[in-house]
Amino acid sequence: MNSLLDHDDLIEAIRNPPRSTGPVIMPDFFLDHFIIGPSFSEFIEDVERVAQQGGGNIIGRRHLIRRGGNSVNTASALLRLGLRPTLIVKTSPQGAELLRALVDPHLDLSHVHTDGLLSATVSIEVDYNGRRTNIMVSDSGSAADFSREDLDETDIEAIRAAPLVALLCLNHNRDPARLAREIFSLVRDVSGAYTFMDIGDPSSRPEILGPLVREVLCEGFVDILSVNENEVKWIARELGLRGKELTDKCEDPDEWLRCARFVAQETGSRVDLHTPFFSATLSSELEVVIPTFRVDVRVTCGAGDAWNAGDIFGTLLGISPDQRVVLANAVGALYVSSSEAEHPTLSDVEQFLRSNPSLTKLGNKLLKPP
Image 1 (cartoon, rainbow, N blue to C red):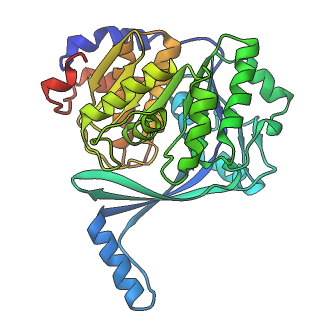
Image 2: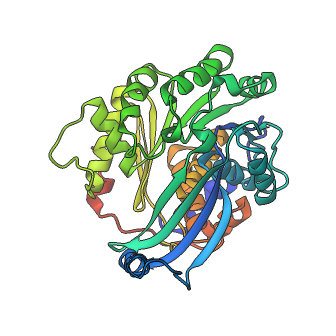
């Protein structure tokens, strides 16, 4: 995988992107405020120092204000890759103005509803235990109450015409199982489109997992389930996977794969797993594991959204599973190594692959079949 020739077929494939109607991405927009810090311990020391003196200012940290939310980030990344996604979100009038100011002017905002509340996140980006990590503090805003009732006829027509419908950021929604059932039922009733789901981090609201697993995943509503290593452990436990290694602090890549394999077997969904060290796509028929690219990580908030965009693009392009995972890894690597949290174009991806980028070191055991 780590030679120029290995990427030639993928480079040729992405030169002929899909011409179909763009995917539908929904339902959240967040205003993202990045605080770029050094190490976690230094950040905590600064906070404690200011708190102990009764208040004050921490100076010398870089800040970024960017478009955010899983849906907006994924749609923005897809647009940069050459697709024309349809974004369906709800926010406030102020949020709509901010959204227009923060995204590419070519992104279709005709399905943005302005009768809600602004959603916002502060992402503290620091190093912790040798890994760049993001600590997000969020106000869910309208991501909490978005429902089927928020869709108008033009939204429904877009869903019916789309080749793929992605439902993201469900961890913020008050009734995510109902939302997923109702949206994906629209897809099932009128088209053969892919259904794509990324629930987000459930650790703050573990009670949402039971209904999502029983009423959505196990009922066959989801074709493609995108997860990171934390999310797949939560879902696997909810499905009944047991083992002393399966803990919140588990950092064993073999366990992440065991969880993903179990979720794919139990639900029938294609499970697409992305981690800092490798990515994988698993179903009852296949298992592909590909190391990620080694880059200097500058931002991590939104990394999964960039990876999802590459995964969705590759799905619609119809390339092989291994090429799709490599493509998603490249899109994710280019995003996290961008100092401005910018998404790459297809030309950027091609140049990156032609540069023969190095891979993370996984160890041979991870690449062996189960």
